[in-house]
Structure formats: structure tokens, C-alpha cells
Image 1 (spheres, rainbow, N blue to C red):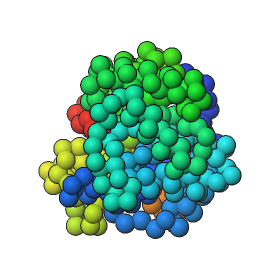
Image 2: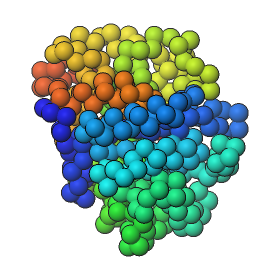
Image 3: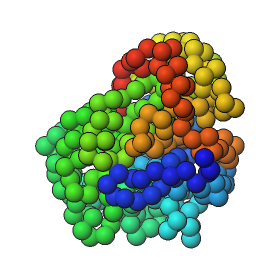
Image 4: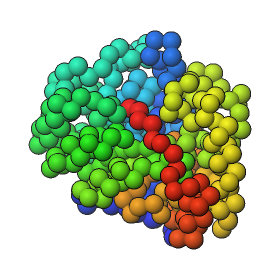
Length: 336
């Protein structure tokens, strides 16, 4: 399979690269109180080079959020795309309010209608674009009644040409189904990787013809084989937190490393790196999946994009991984 491997973005019918790029890490440091929520310091020039290299390698989907770096990720993405903006699909998200200067979260989405509209205008400004291709709600367990208002406001933004389609970043099938009934809903972003299967959400995506956009496809780097201890993580990095969904928290990491060793040989059996094998597992899991691994460097972009040359794992590889890890790949821990 060539680097032009593509998938359809749900019911929108838009063809995008089968691999997207997640832009959380390039947002740099930001905080909720004293809690670091970024992936540590970043080199903006390298981030821009990495995005432009991804474009050259056929990547046409970039996923970010207003809150990543409190606006910084969106600004860097907009700057890097420049005149090539029309060649890509930009996905961003609306969630927590924040202060761009202090890089601190200041509140949630209290008013579903005015909050969504205000956040959309901010994202358009930072991304230097007239429209957002995919606008996503960025709260895993947002109140259902308020979510209906969010969906209605997003439909209005579609009518005004500010966004083309929308979706929800959630691991809850009920919430995914609620949004799925909106005419211009075309994607659900959710947890999915070799360690954490998510059959209930995949079923919703397949039933409603929605794209399954996969966050955490490399388990915050654990599936690359790079991390063997928490001591390798830099300061001001969310992976030092003890959130239950953090793959590198002190309780989870040892067990995940053991499971990685169990499937290492299968994931790399046809010349792939571990990361490329993990991405191949996602493509084989469903025809709707589009993984969005994060990045900070050109090298990471090149390795992940090269996974498209291999394509999905084959049936035998999937069977072996299923047997080695058991039929259930672990509970999915919901998060925004």
C-alpha cells in the first residue's frame, strides 16, 4: 500500500489519508491550576517542519483543539499550512475555556450555544482559515441535554459556512449515538489501540456510517517501545500525572510493558516498527478507523507516515494478537 492510502470521513464522503496527525503535543505547556496538561516544551520551528513534511508524505488530516497549548497548537498548525490549507482537512475541538496569555484553563462550556460560537470564532482566527472541516465537542461525558444544544448550534454553524461537519470526542456509546442523529455529524473521536479495544463505539460508527477517529493510537508512546520507565518523561508533561487513563501512570505502565512484550514479535513480523504495527492493527480493526498519533519531530512524522506503505495487519496477525492479549483488550477509560 502506498503513502496515498485513504479512508472516507464517514457520511461526509470526503476522502482523507488513512493516517491523521494529532496536534496536542505541539501546543506546548499549558495548565489547569498547577497541573501540567501538555507534553512538555516544544520547538515551534520543528513543529512547522514536521507538519509540512507530513503534507509532503500524503497526510491530509490534522486534528487539534483550542485548548491544546491554550491556542498555541492551532496557531502553529495554521502557520504551517499556509497556502496549502485547501489541501487538508482541519479537525479541531471546542471544550474548556482558557487564557491564551497565561496558558491556563479558566472554565468549562457553561453556555452551549454562545460558548460554541465564541470558541469557533477563536479557532478560525488562530487557524487563519474561513472554515473548519470537522468541529468536535471535547468533553467525554458532557451533559446530554446540553449536548443537544451543542449539536443544534453546530448545525447552525454549518448553515453559516463556518464549519463543514461536526463530531464528538467521547468513549460513551450513548453520547456518540446522540450526536450521530445530527445531519452533519460525520465522526466520533475515541480511544482505540492494541491495549484498549472499543467495540461499542466502533459499532456506533459502523451503524451510522461515521468515521472512527482514534486518539491514543500509540498509547501515549508506550506502543512505540520508547518508554520503559517514567523517569524518561520530561518535566511539565501530562504523562507524569496519575490520571487513570494515562498509560504511563505508575500503576499501569509495568503491566502495559509486559503486554507489549507479548505482541512485539507479531507487530514487527513483516518489517514494521512497533509504532507501524500498532497503526496497522487499527486499520485492520475496522474500515472506519483513522488513527491520529501525536508528534513533535520530523522523524516521528516520517515513521508514522511510512506505516501507510504497509497498510492493515493481516487476519493471521490480528488473530495472534487477539490470542496473546485475550479477547478483551482492556477497559476503555473515558476522558475529554
